[in-house]
Amino acid sequence: MNDHLMNTYARLPVSFERGEGAWLWDESGKRYLDAISGLGVTALGHAHPTVAEVIADQARLLMHTANIVRIPWQEKLGAKLAEISGLDRAFIGNSGTEAIECALKIVRLAGHARGIALPGVIVMENSFHGRTLAALSATGSGKVQAGFEPLVGGFERVPFNDLSAVEKIAAVPNEITAILVEPIQGEAGIQVPDTGYLAGLRRVCDAEGWLLIFDEIQSGLCRTGRWYAYQHEEAIPDILTSAKALANGFPIGACLARVEAAELLTPGRHGSTFGGNPLACRTACTVLDIMRHEHLADRAGALGARMLADLRQRLESRSPVVSIRGRGLMIGIELDREIEDFKALALERGLLLNVTRSKVIRLLPPLIIDEDQADEIVATVSTLVESLD
Ligand SMILES: Cc1ncc(COP(=O)(O)O)c(C=O)c1O
Image 1: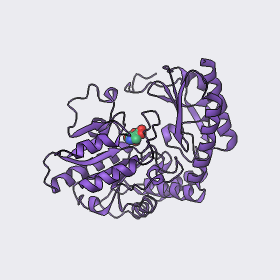
Image 2: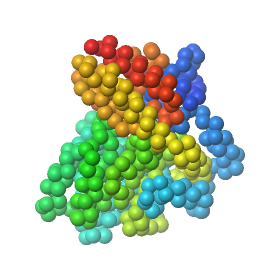
Image 3: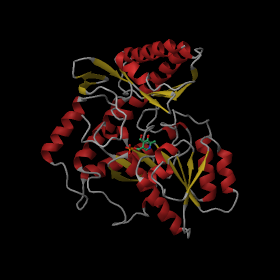
Image 4: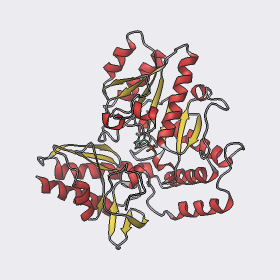
């Protein structure tokens, strides 16, 4: 069946024919509750009527022109992203990893402008930033990097949530130009740092003249109860990467920056054929409008808090459970054992979820789930975890 596809994914033995809201249907007509949103992408649920209509309308009008001309929908999207993030300017690409590449290219320019020949970036253990060569070199996972050496240089790795490790680097002569960090680590198993960590990183960056880059490709766009997770703290980054939910499944990614950093990119220094075309940008504008009008950040915050409380009440004392953590609708349940078959067991019960780091059940449901669906996710996951006890 897969003879003509590169074998890059361990796929579950199911495929879906259609979706509606948080529901998916496979080819036999069986219904599943989606607790992973295509890895944090379909925040508005499947087949959202307004999004579908906008895509169809724009496809009939004008899909693509390339960036050799002005693209009004890209300009509108830039303004909306600036408003929700507090940053100034956007570069629109097609994926998360491309947004990271853009951020890292700005870092190189910033370092060179300061006379640093080999600008370094502090990155975190267990981080994930994508699969292009620079992004995987920044990523804190031997599994992601293995076989792709030589890696891109210039990354200095420290433990996540350890401000003193960063301060130690700052205390001695160095060529660091930036810190790159996920405000909540996703692939690492939903790791939420201590309050004050992000603000502490901001203080170090201000003192050292480093750029602070937040990778909110997974945690951003209302999932944690704010537009971006850093907005839970007083810590605005210099550069922000955002993708996944931005167009609810239409491929897009954005690198946002404060004006001083953004201005380092001048015509000809960066680009993308597809990036920021009218179809992608109008879709993203629509998604952001819906998120705002439907108060999805508040909804994700409240529903997520309720799910976390329910999961803790039901599972915290169970022996396989190491920790239940998260923020908003970004939830991880770490067990004391490898649970690779957990996804298949959940699927049998009509629930689509994900396992990361082999031991962490990851829940990233659509932000539009209702209370009953949230309860169903909690009940099914709890029953399955209890059956391991
Ligand atoms: C935090 C983070 N950064 C970067 C990426 C890469 O994004 P993409 O797969 O769109 O290239 C991901 C994807 O999971 C992510 O979670």
